[in-house]
Structure formats: C-alpha cells, structure tokens
Image 1: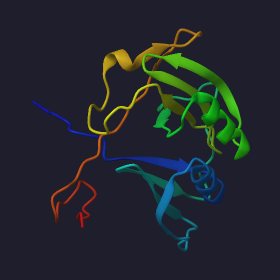
Image 2 (image 1 turned 45 degrees about the vertical axis):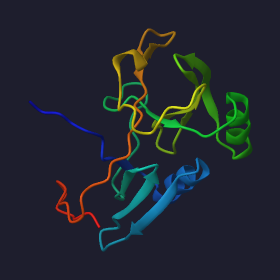
Image 3 (image 1 turned 180 degrees about the vertical axis):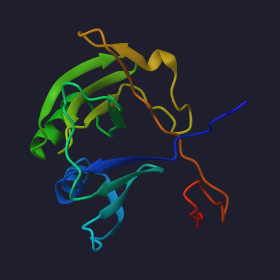
Length: 175
C-alpha cells in the first residue's frame, strides 16, 4: 500500500518571473535560489515555504490560463502568522496585494483570497488556534463549501527532514 508522508514541493509555470518573485516576497516567502536565463530564455527559482518549496519555471512561450475555464490546481493555502484576520488584511493591503474574496470563516480560522501575477489563487489563512507543523497534511473535514457550492481544500504541509544524501525523484541529493 502506498503511504505518502508529505508533499515535498509544488512546481508552477509562470509568464513573468520578476513579477512572480516580487509577489511571493511580498507574501513573506523567501527565494532560495534562481537560475537563468539560458539561451532559450528559460529561468527558474526555488522559493521557501516553511519546510517546503515552490519551484517556479519561466519560458518565453508560457501564457496565463483562462481563469473561467481553467483545470488543474484550484488554490494553494498559506498559514500566515498574524494576530488576527484584520491584521492580515491590513498587512496585505499595505503591501499592495488585492484581496478578491473573503474573509471566509472555516473550521479553525479565517482566510482571504489573493491572486499571483498569473491568476493562481492563494488563500492566506489566519488560524484561531496554533496548529503544530507536523500534525497533519490534510483531512477531509478541512474542506469547506463556498457560496458557489464548490469544495475548497486547504492543505497544510508538515516539515520533513530527509536523510543525508537522500536521492529524490528529481535525481538530486539532499544536503
């Protein structure tokens, strides 16, 4: 039986690397490394999110998706450190980030929705009680119904330490 322990990383294709990196830095995420452009104009970056990573890839031919009919990832959720949802909203607005939905209350907190430069939806959540980093990856009752009837799932990622010299599915070794 397969038993996944954690989500290692998420990879995103973007249409503007500079705008994307600026957006994620405004959200408080730390770029670990960047590369490129190569001869074809391809660039990449790795952004730290707690103990996980977002790998970002740019190619001059990538275009944003049709928001109305897009398939694939519905949204990502970041647990934000904030005293309250009001403080989080104030911080986002101060940073120039537009909130397009929310605040929305759910089981253990409240979130607001923002979009990155390519239209990917990010829930920024303020939790009403502290959740340990390694408590869970996702549970079915973390889903909630929006007014449109769609189900949303917020996935919180536990920290995972790989053994020294572990070879991942990308062929790279952990340091």
